[in-house]
Image (cartoon, rainbow, N blue to C red):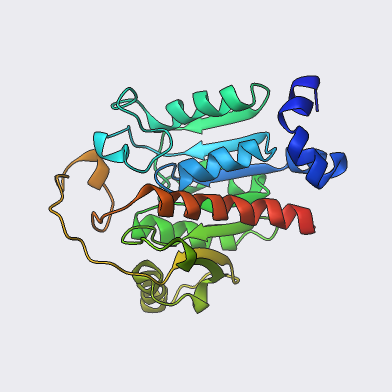
Length: 249
């Protein structure tokens, strides 16, 4: 670490030690989706010492993102999400290597992301089809550690957010839909992987102002209510899985 980084990460180094901080800084991490979950995840990773981070998202900031997404303010509405987030992350650590890709992960674009070049691949995608594709793709790579976020919408209780192996996740409609999709296609992830999820499921009580053809609704199953603290906790826990995995070796 240079002198600037030594000052930035002083408190983390006191906890983890210089050797571990060097190890964290050498890892290469890829985050798909930088919305309500992914934006907080990316920030936590950089604040924890991750220097090599690629962020992927095709959306621009919407006014309806402001209630829960780190990068969304009334001043960033209309801007490309990954560009806004990259600027913020470099303000945290100017020496970090942040790659911003404004694109959608899909079956057609999958190979262009070169997942095999990363130590960690993190899934914070909303689209069911693309999420399923990413899970199968990432789990097929032997040297890549993969973590995923299940649905963070319709949640309120922070203490019900937890981590478990994908096939053991209960009470999450998104996990259930993914499992059904894998079973129907008879195409399964090559190995088990950990997910952040909550078994809480509240009802929408208000009317959505988002048109089904708007950019925010693009490729998404349904627009559901969300609050900042639950989406942020999902993101922090996803980042925590990475740092803990590196720490435990």
